[in-house]
Length: 350
Length: 253
Image 1: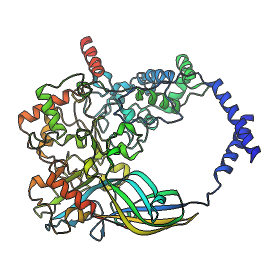
Image 2 (image 1 turned 90 degrees about the vertical axis):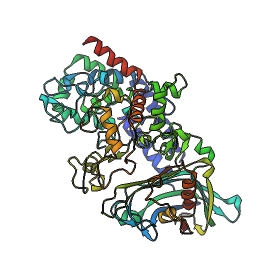
Image 3 (image 1 turned 180 degrees about the vertical axis):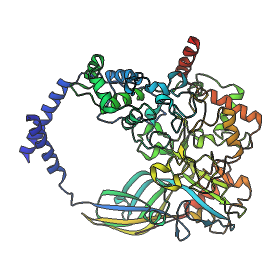
């Protein structure tokens, strides 16, 4: 056994030496609140300064689409908290997709699946989908890879980020994933109040109390936080929120999660979206069918529509107009300062 | 090429050193299941009868246990199996899945004749004072936190009831309990034999019917909307449910 140990030690030493020689990228540490469950960062795609910069460049570059007209940022616009302000998103040549573009803020902390139906387990896997989807970016990965291999700037950036490698779709996805992990939203008025750096107005406080059932018996209970759980304001689970009347589990227009699990009991369930920056991300629901927060509140206040697997927490809330306004006032406090700055910057330019 | 040869040698050496079985300890597979009376608890696909006679279906049952310990006749030989588990029954849509339940495998247990399992129902005050940001995503305590209470939800029972008998389960029932002073350690006396190099088994069964109806036949009147929901706000409700919960377990080998 001693000779085996000797080989193991020598090999480890040589591997360490050789890996040091290839390392060119600068590690990047994320800064996020201590209340956030740490992000899952795969060991084969650690964050680096160069990787994030490459990912950002790719994110905003339409080179990834068939005719170089659509980038990731087309549907994930920074000034709209990385959504697109539309209902069902439109992609290549104006083709309509099935669902709306969710925000990417804090997406690096989503560890229970990506997309509205959770079909993708990781950012690295997720990034492969839109680029080759015929409705979204309609790209051909073979062509995209060749374009990038022929692009001097990208040749240099990929080398800086990943070393001497052949540019391929998986490295593109890794770079995009690294960039998206840096999209952190945690500096809203709500966060400042929780950190005792600010104070809610009376109306915002009442909305907070309703949202979190904080003063049951004194103030109405909104039941919101059971699904829209802080600090991400989503529990990351898949729920049926009573959006569509369904007499049985096979009657949904969009099966959502059920298409992924193959279980009819998951039909009509969608990922609980975050409410951070919600005032910037209208319209609402997985297909953008609700234009305003008032409409959303009316839906929940009425108890939603019947379906056999409607979440038991979706029930008539009996909130009066004042309470609904208080809730909306509270929701405004979830707008991150950086996200708002992007929004205001773009509006100023228009 | 040299690196490949040496890497292969490293891999072989690691495999040789790790493949060696430890014959001095044993394993224990604990299967956690949920029932309704004597029937496996199946979500949505099956209907059960609430104590008042109303039909109901379940959508979620989960609970924390902590300080799960194998009890020895000589208490100095008690063996801690787990600091904390979250048993999350949420997608058991058929009988086979319900009967299979959730298995936790505990390894490296000193062999011996144990006399029971001690289970902390809920979270110890020390654990309940932590928060999800203290853990990684796969840890049980990354879930079920209630920030307003600055603590965790110890148990959830969620379902839907058909109050008007029209075969539509329109009334949501959501019962969440969790406060530090509810934490209770309970010892279940059952002989568990651990043998070196072998895996033993035990079963922990939660009878959800016993949560909803006490041993003296009391239950919540769910025709009253205020009784269809409690999130540890009404002491008379959550203490009733929690006390029933602590009496709803059986442990066997």
